[in-house]
Image (cartoon, rainbow, N blue to C red; front, side):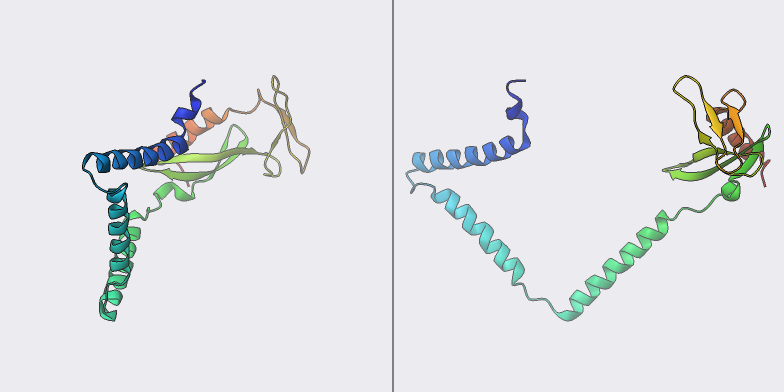
Length: 173
């Protein structure tokens, strides 16, 4: 790890710039040109290119046409990216073995995923809070103080499987 500075992007970029200046100086010495005249020529050419681009005369109708074209391109691109909500979009709540579960969906490229899956109190439908330790899980309702252990409630993985199964069978509403 002594040579960590060698792989630093700043070292690489500054080193490349310095190396190009040194190579330009060597080239000028070999060709019997004034010192760094090639570098000066390149910098002058870049400056003149920037000035010519910035002072290019454009008609107003061309600018308006380009702006309208860009606006249309963005609109068409956004329309093609629009995701249509699937039939199961409103299926975000169900009861499995007395437990009320609620969730949301997220579109991930080419498929939908179940996110924010959380159990709710079977008495008042308030979201349950995990009050357990690392080795033993208890959940409780902050509204009615209903309590349950982690052995009584299904795992989120099991619940996800049941939700996906209901969607595939069309057994939701």
